[in-house]
Length: 263
Image (tube, rainbow, N blue to C red; front, side):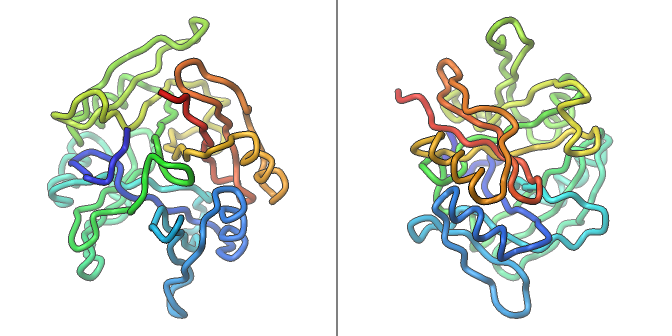
């Protein structure tokens, strides 16, 4: 469960980069019931809100050759120390630690196989205002070609604790992620080793994607289809998890919709 008392290593913020900000704002508004709040005339981007609470960010994609995608930020106490740990583990610094006015300090990285992620050292802003509720982030997930390597790298960078569980039907192992020093009910994500075909979105590189809670997965999927997105998988029922679908927005940024199993 993700909560807003963000501890080191827990997801605290996320944003999506796309080539068309107004179109993305319209799409996610229809699918997740989000309201879009522009930052101002000087910045092409802004914040998504659900019932007045910040749930995510939106910006125009400016990096040449970059694919539209969600970026997930994890809380750290010291972004500079995290940067050193990333480099020591064979990762790459994409954006060096940078102060965002008084709000906090951020950095972006790639893991050794190219999976992109980010960190946030909180200042006045700790992160998003709403999680683990309909229309907000409830889980994070990494698809990778090397689960063992991912465990070593992210374990060294964040101190995460990992727990393996068998996939239904003997289809492999899913690894659950818990922040360092936290109980199992603070699990915030998972990682899955997948084949090359499952990594085609990112040109064969690993990638993280967010899972958004929704009250009715089928209704949300219908909005994906009606508003220019596509559905790669589902909706399907996952025992003990809920009803879920893997989706792409109109620009092929991937995300998951989940109606969690009650209790």
